[in-house]
Image (cartoon, rainbow over all chains, first blue to last red; front, side):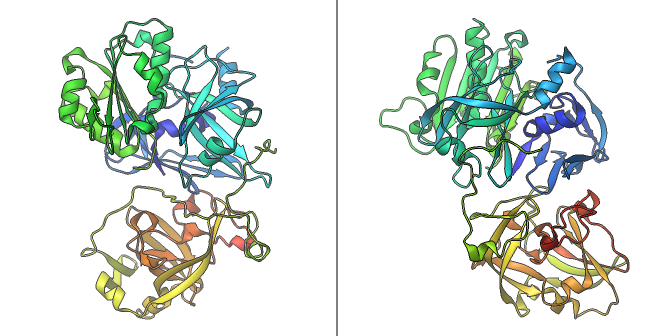
Length: 87
Length: 244
Length: 203
């Protein structure tokens, strides 16, 4: 199923300890900048793959191996958490 | 305080089903009783986890249908080939338990302080978080100018019809029916297109704040139409439900 | 750590005793065919589609779509097992054995890395793809394989977890040394035998 970054808000909260849906993500491949909420998310497979909506490059991969989150962020040039409202 | 709030949202808690209400033949609202709920923003969702006797579990996310201060509720649409939604919409009953985590998502949210004018565009069950926004707006007695454009296949599939019609006057609610409409139907028909948006969307010069929610293709098509009408991409927020 | 049980939530199909014997450990039977992807569905036109066998950057042999369909195809009935715990019994496919394709090139490779439209890869030992247990499949349940399920063609290697049955396959890279593919790189098992429940590296 293809969703967007809103759908993995809970998973990202687990990993980063704060809400990341509003965090700005910059694609390392094409430079596109936008909120994590807008990224293309492919989940329910062996893991979760987050792709740049503009160029489809992989931004993040999250594999849950034996209950641990293994996170690869190498497709991101930058990830800036939303320093706005706290919740 | 912040640390506790994060921990609370991170952990799964057991919610009891307080009530169920069928909105349409395939859509049900489930009100939950939660021991430890920190409150939520309109537009946020919660994660639900169900576990079978053999230990197999499945997780899904559902938009919160209620406003802060009201009993927490989700509205679930049954997908025929779904794994969890048939259970939630047909089997689950009052008194049952669900594991729940949330509220989640700070980005696709609206509060009167965020201003407007507000444009809400819903495709099918995408209306759920937008209804939470409308309820929050109403409970806050906010006067932010607001329009809802709600696309459904048929009138029978419109969720929350009576309630949405009650907002007429304080907000503008317009429907478009894409597959069938009743005789004498006075609303829009067909898919959301530029002509329809020309009649419903606020002028770009007013710097509207837009929330679009629904199936992926619907959301992308509508967002593109708004950008073509000079809407600022940074003020168009989208939430895609997957599928077509 | 066990989750509280949700009353009444059960898999939609309860296997019969005979079926239960066909289920590897930790799997349950599903009636539908879940669509699980790591990326958007590619749309390579058949006129541009090829299946290639490569080694060290060189294409040893390549088949166009008509050439693939001209090869002798088989009907395969198989149980398939996804690492996310669903299994589908008795699925029927149509495809060309990988052995027939590999027989057309000279090589001494011990491993292959399947590569696909969209960039997905998965690795397999040569003996698992060369001995009648692996196909390039283009038909499912009597119909052309649908794009969301890997069409026009995917790998079919049902004796391993289904992430090895790479969707939208475009060829095999012949390797002297084993190299992990996409999910293998992220902690999934290098081989993936469902009967030994080899889900993760180290299992």
